[in-house]
Image 1 (cartoon, one colour):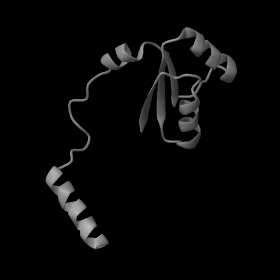
Image 2: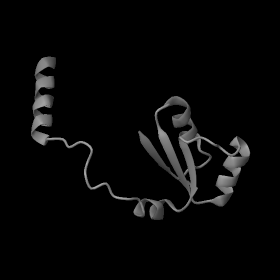
Image 3: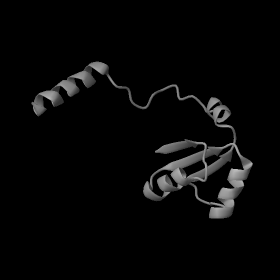
Length: 92
């Protein structure tokens, strides 16, 4: 799973995800060089393939992301509604 954290702060959320969800790759985007420098001072230069800290504006970062034209999974609203109805009938 890939996680994008916009506005890293001091990377508390990113570190939590990194520590508790081993199969995730985290990209944290922070626009303040001072914050990025503080994170590096507090935690050192993180050399982990699962974690990437990027100095950028979140809006421009997202605008420049490649677009995945093919969704990985599509949901059929009719099938989803049937499953919801079956669940509610079994709870009655």
